[in-house]
Length: 139
Image (cartoon, rainbow, N blue to C red):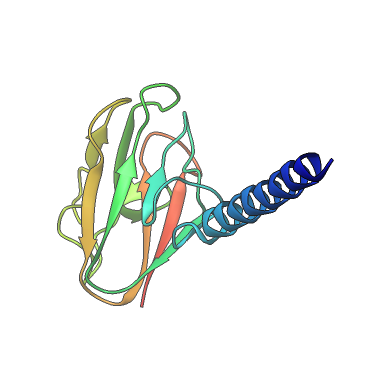
């Protein structure tokens, strides 16, 4: 009987430890990245078939944003700094996206890494898909 009580107490402690670890994992996952509206890793902007998965992301000056077009769900995009589905270069925006022709991104391509050196608010658009834009807030 004593052995059974000890085994039950040991199992109870194990269950408590496992539940605490699970709660910690959930809490850490909830902290996630600095973006909003979904997304994977910190500073990642995910592209769907015709939309960005995030509406905005906030980073610090000097940080890099990873634009990802997954092989299993993305579409072909041409992205740039702009508005109304058109490239519109802005002073202080990163040169990589601050172009009049945009950058083509196809499903499964490696992420496009863009470093935002200057504080400000920048809008990245897709020139193919109406309404596809994400705001990058750089502090």
